[in-house]
Image (cartoon, rainbow, N blue to C red):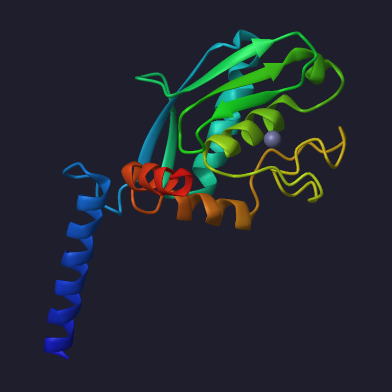
Length: 178
Ligand SMILES: [Zn+2]
């Protein structure tokens, strides 16, 4: 019993050390969430909805945390060109998110749009054929769908993407394109 416990403690310490090494920074172990900062000042009409979208993600995942301000890597913009909301992102916490006010005027829920685009920045692909309970089904279920929270599978995938810290996510992506 005692030995087993000691071995387990050793394994945990090793795993923690490995996590720190993977994350590439002291103190950024596997148990610590990656904090991603966002800047919503470029979308002044949607500040509250963007904060709500971030709060919905924060309530659903453990390994990544979204915070307004600071040195932002996710930048929100408000557009009026009818091209549709979209994001340019590397899928691991860096990106520009464009919220199209015309799409909002057409009845699309802006909190859902913001949370969906953040989902792309957290590494999730579109899944338009999915139900309203999924965030990544986007405009698929129609404008009556106001759900702005990820479902359990989406949350689990994001937690998996960020399980070993941001550096590990970046390394994963680098290997994927190499
Ligand atoms: Zn999308």
